[in-house]
Amino acid sequence: MKSAFSTAFVLAFAASTAFAASHSSTVRMGTEGAYPPYNFINDNGEIDGFERELGDELCARLDLTCEWVTNEWDSIIPNLVSGNYDTIIAGMSITDERDEVIDFTQAYLPPDPSVYLALGEIDLESGVIAAQTGTIQASHIASSGATLVEFATPDETIAAVRNGEADAVLADKAYLQPIADENADLMMIGEDVMLGGGVGMGIRESDRAMKRKFDTAITAMKKDGTLNRMIVKWFGEDAAVWEG
Image 1 (cartoon, rainbow, N blue to C red):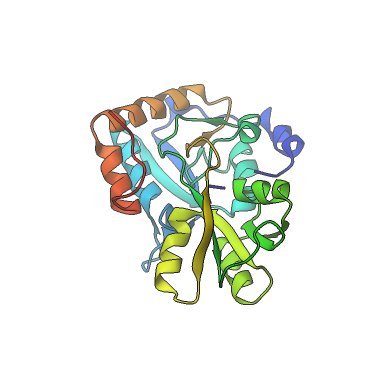
Image 2 (cartoon, one colour):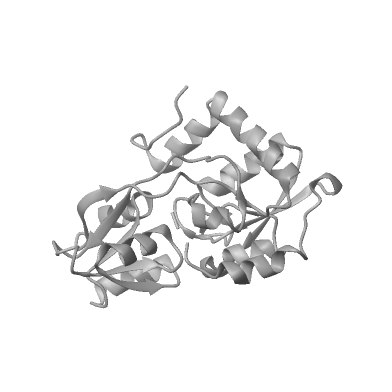
């Protein structure tokens, strides 16, 4: 899913932050809460979605207590580094740029195709394309020759297409497919675009013990099939799953 922010700004926090996983049984899980089916706020006002279920299962396996925290996407990495929570579990694609600032667990979700959503067929190479700020989709559009317009939230990118501010939006297929299915005026166009190296948990670089713990639990969930069952539950029978 969703990279462009000041590395220098984030690094400025690094020396003053740390998480001692061995000293606490509570892990604060940072998510956006606005990107279904990855994560969203349900009708009861609670964080829900694939990553809520995944995070709770990981904590249960590690005998940890999950404390869920929501944070706006454009500041989600700086607030991890500054200590406002201990992990990012928010549909975040693993990229080299992000990996210079934070660490990642192994991927818990294979790369999801990105797709374009529009009111009709357009010239994607010369069009005005919306994307959420700081995402791999925004970076792709910026390097493609099309005109990029960025918005703070996923909902705003859809609204931009509807009100004519953008010709199309580029986002994860898992996010846009239900919108296309439920709205006859919107359609997916063009070919799928493969971006990023899968989705992983973001962790401060100093928290190596935590990374090892979550890697161990993710590996176990892959081996026993639990993770694939969760992926199919939230993303459908056609979703990419882990082999073996």
